[in-house]
Length: 198
Image 1: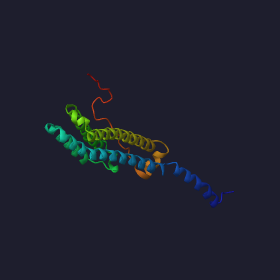
Image 2: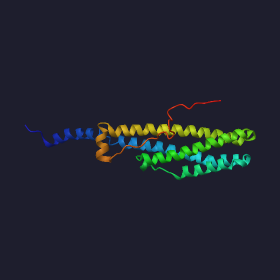
Image 3: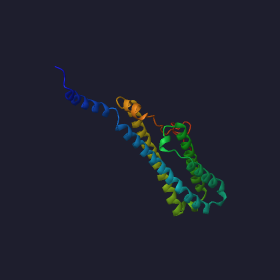
Image 4: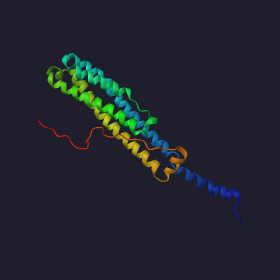
């Protein structure tokens, strides 16, 4: 005896719903939005640092008039770093992320030189404003590192989801999903610990 059409539809509908739900219909956008949110955290920490730099430069300028070249380098590095932006839609472009990471690295190096200048100015090192700004910058650098790590973890989750079965089916068919790029070290041989000599 043939199966009635209503009974056949009642059996097929749950199977179809299960198949579609297993294809990443909800999990792909959730993972993508999670990675974009972590990217916003990275951008927020970069903005925090960019906002602190003018205050640090102004504080040091009052004490270190003859170190204008270092101060100029910090100001220029900040300008370059804030001029490069990466929107969430560009997170699948590794070249754009490298460009941003390089500009942010140059700013970090310039800030390092600026902090080294303070070794020559004992009055500056004891200035409460400078100490507070230095502490804020150190905290910001730590926050940037954590935000980058969290972003890389979110990207790993997203990239794994769009490449593994069954979510890969939905990722390709419904979203045309592409892997997102992660942050990479910009310093050559960054995996090796630096040597410290006194």
